[in-house]
Length: 319
Image (cartoon, rainbow, N blue to C red; front, side, top):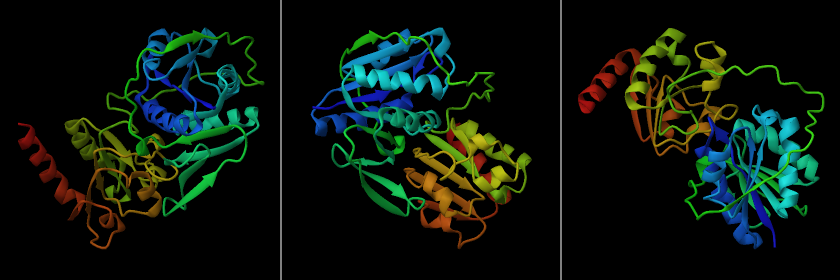
């Protein structure tokens, strides 16, 4: 019997919805391993968030400490490992967010076990499918150690539904050893737009936008649709937009209900990060651009000609 421990992330004192797909994956693993789904939450002032997360798991282990308010893998990893031991967990799972991808390899080392990253399907308790070669191949991997650590792509698992009122158990973090690391400061980009990984609509621009100031037209459309702004690596490398907007193999993997690609040719690395979107709209002046191979709707045009009409059409529909 193997219980599955899932990391429940928080933001502004609330449970992040990006953790819900990981809970779905954890339930699938628990069913095959014959155990229960447990949760772990780490932070400061997370009482409300822990009560919310407990609705999805049988038991939630909470480390609520003022010194844990700012994430550091050095202090968080031992606590995840401690919760795994407390709950008799054979599996530890997290969403493949920036935090999850940074934290879970350290947890793996502390548990002295194998890890499967970017899991897109659970085949058995220790056997999974994950993308390789920028998503052009799907590999079947098996972890052979007694314990298993995994990160899962939130775009490949449905958000979990509430399962009842689970128990919240407070654990003592003890003396925190940051292994010489010191938290200095946190610089956040403030935005009223939804998080890129959780937005239902994403409007992205590529190198074809020519300059950073031209992204303003995409921002206008983005805000009209209540979406998030994205970009290709080429646009980021050119300095058009900040790198936290990058969508692709080396950026964020997204799967919104609507993805609008403007001035994006469709390099394989970018397609790996957005081809799971439900509806893809592409605008590019090159009719041979690879983006049209994955697009549901395509328009061969320059963005200068297409976007004013596109925006005007949206305005008319929205009234």
